[in-house]
Image (cartoon, rainbow, N blue to C red; front, side, top):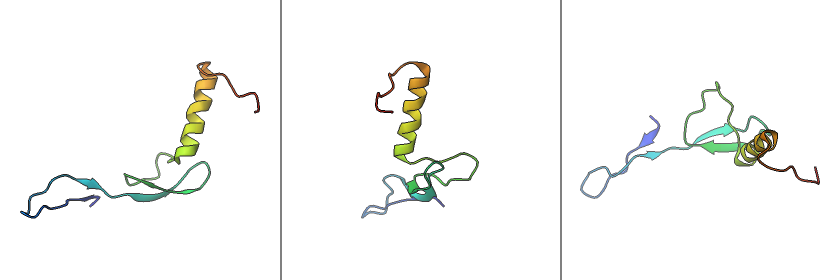
Length: 70
């Protein structure tokens, strides 16, 4: 079970809290925690690599200018 149900003093549940699962970034290999269970079918990325991929996609589409230092 991936959800934990916190209880109030009266025994009623308020909300569902997702348990974080351990995973490794598919690009850099850094250990990360995600709010879902990675099945291995799709790659999982850390925040830094995900932002880098999004930026490269915007540059490729012409929506953003590339840095001059690259």
